[in-house]
Length: 162
Image (cartoon, rainbow, N blue to C red; front, top):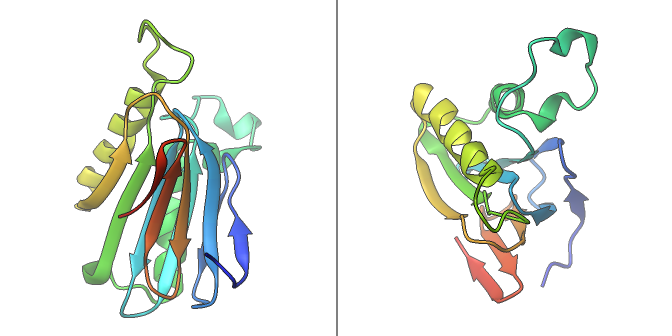
């Protein structure tokens, strides 16, 4: 149970904190990807709710929702973490989401495309994912406790810690 203050990260948003009493949380991770990053040594954590893999080519004319895209959100999230003195060697990365929601035939595979895009972007920069709760066909809620780095995932089937 979380008794301290929480910051809600909605679809297409990201947030970084160095407040050990804060929890970053995001709801309704279906095909979207929740990206939680934490540095336990510096007590800095960040969470992004990524909706789509790549920003459109005409993006400069449509700046709203910039953090909805993996190729925009991931560099920004890490830039903000480093601005708060996070150390690359200490980072622990956890992913959630990437499910197949309302796509019974798996024709669109939005969740899979989102997951592959996020992993590709992280891998290209040399980041390793420590743990993940991805795929399937259900919704997830993801919470990152900035003070401890604990990541809780809640689904309709229960709750777990990564």
